[in-house]
Length: 308
Ligand code: NAP
Image (cartoon, rainbow, N blue to C red; front, side, top):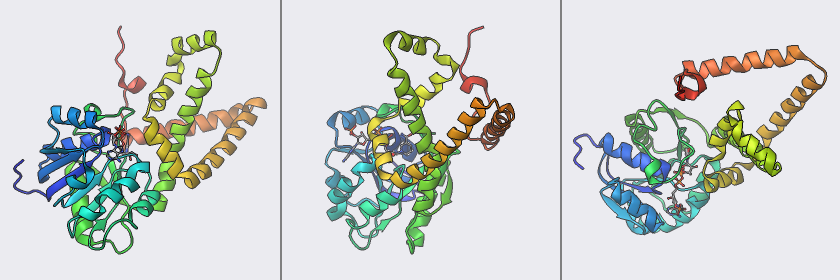
């Protein structure tokens, strides 16, 4: 790779799945470093990444892969961050930036901070972009384009390191927002984590119905169920780790959700059509604001094409 205005000399991405491989593709597309190393503990995954020509160097040994890297981007499930931190701690170059893409921020910082040596900069982050797919073939370079990347620097973080990390995400087309890890975890609990839990739950309930009804659930899925199944197809390891690591914020938001659900239950029981109509009007407005903010497409049925 030859880049005239590289932000980094050498980058290592740990984890070659959906997000790691998308970061790798974006690194190459926007030429933000001279040398890109990609590492995954899984031999089959790294061989798939090699076939896709995602990087300059490929490793299955995490410790070796970070030699002389200026930026190490951890793109493994949240529950694997500590073991990766322990594996790389002894091989980090002074001044290296350690960041990540994990969907939970406070627990990742707490897991990594005690493991890393003095003289390196730990600055966690989270690109709020993804799909329900996994693995190196599922990634794409424009995944982060016009999406938010939330960076959660610890107090007193090195300004120059923060600048470089922000510049990287901006080069990928992302809009960067800085916040505390606690605030990140609370916001993402309601915008991402609880919606995933609801999807897992509704699809689980339907799959527990007896066989004959279950086939009708599939047959008539376009009634709304189908869109929940997309979310409920998300990676089980990743989402198990999200819920185990963002327990407090998820339980807090789930409490609020349950209260509101009970209020809806009452409105239906007592025939309070006004309450239902008012809520449904308000929620339609939220959808409009997401489209206006450029975070989704206005096309009907999520832009699915339909035969005439
Ligand atoms: P993924 O497609 O399953 O990729 C994760 C990769 O990391 C897998 O190849 C996995 O290998 C590998 N891995 C696991 N433990 C490892 C270890 N100790 N050392 C080296 N490699 C290891 O998952 P993903 O969707 O890219 O998610 C990665 C991170 O991005 C997670 O922290 C997630 O919270 C975050 N994130 C995801 C999304 C999304 O929509 N998916 C969006 C934003 C952020 P194995 O398969 O063999 O375990």
